[in-house]
Structure formats: structure tokens, C-alpha cells
Image (cartoon, rainbow, N blue to C red):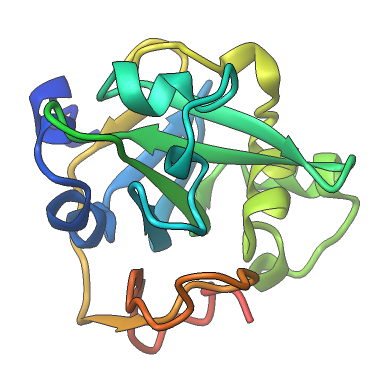
Amino acid sequence: MPRLVPLRFFSHPTLEVAPQLIGKILDVDGVCGRIVEVEAYTDDPASHGYRRTERSEIMFETYGHVYVYFIYGMYYCLNFTTDRDNVGAILIRAVEPLSGIEVMRKRRGIHDLRKLCSGPGKLCEAFGIDLDFNWTKIGERVKLYHGKSGLVRTSPRIGISKATDLQWRFFEAGSPFVSR
């Protein structure tokens, strides 16, 4: 396995860290995948960091932590907190499955490799990530390793109704594992 990504990596501004996450290897108990899509969130109107709440406090108080929240009453979303000096987090939208694939297939109840982790809720289900991971440091239960990335492109974030002009979605061009 390549080198672990150090916590200080996450201390930098969110918009610097986000594109650098593409190609990194996510590992949760041997279930591994290469990150191919992320979205950056700071204090913009589409972000939980727009207003400080009990849920979003982690975005204000930490960097290098796992931030998991529950959405639509049915899906968990995995984020990494960023930026030592400001509010920030990066939503992990999609990964390319690498190992533990049979575990992922069983958890998700599907066989198609491209659909296992091609969205934030699918990814959390495949990796077994839930609210118990919230507020843990990256490197404890969720590990992140250096990896290689292809060409990184940007677009507007998906599924938001505010700050839709911001090109804060970063993804690996041509990857069949990117969502939508």
C-alpha cells in the first residue's frame, strides 16, 4: 500500500485540497477505492458551513476529520474537513472500487462494478460508513493513501440549488466510475 496522507494535507484551503484528492486511495477495513470525484464546500450558501449549527460545527472546528451526515432520511455522505483557518469540507462523491469488491457487492446488493460507488450514498453503503465514523480523525477508521490521478476536470456541484455557478466539483476525466 502507498504512503498514508498526513493530516497536515487537510490543513490547506478547501479549494486547494479538493482536486488533490482525485486519485487518493480510500481504505475502510480493507475495502478500498480510488477517489474519482469530489465536491468542495466552504461558507457558500449551498454548504453546511454557511451557518454554524451543531451538525456543521465540525467544519468550523477541525481539519483532517471525517464528517458524515444523513440526507433525505436514507443516505449517508462522507466528507473530509479541511482548512485550518476557515470553514471547509470535501464531499467524496465517487470512487473506483479496488479491493473488498465482493463485500461492496453484498452491502449494495448489486453486481455492476461501475455502480457500486458512483454517488455519495452508494459509496457509504459499499464501504459500511455511517454516523459512527463522524468526528474521527482521518487515519484512524478511515485511511487515505497517496495514489495516481488522471486529468482532473471541474464542473458545477450536483444536486444543489444555491451557488450553482461555482465550479467546485472535481472529477477524473473519462473515468467510468464518476457519478451521473
